[in-house]
View: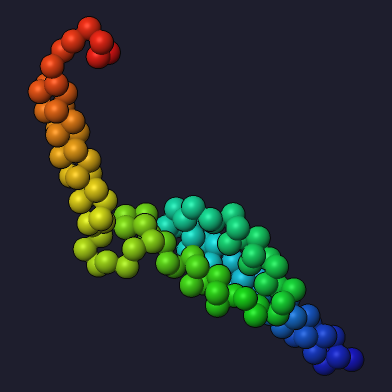
Length: 114
């Protein structure tokens, strides 16, 4: 009789451990997204819960989605963390603004031009 209850206790422990383990595993992409300050962390969290109903078929994609973004370099994959196109674009904007100011100074000031 004791062994029956002991076996039932072990079975209950195993079932609860597996249940908790599945719940904990499905939440890993959300925790990664949260730690990286991911802009889509709520969507990743909801998709993680949906993945429970698809037997975690979409879980690898959630993991990839969560790990692609880093706050210091965005979606880019450059190891230096510098967004060169953004720096070049800002420099080009500064050059164009300087050129516009130069052309405005060269333009003759007449009453007709406002």
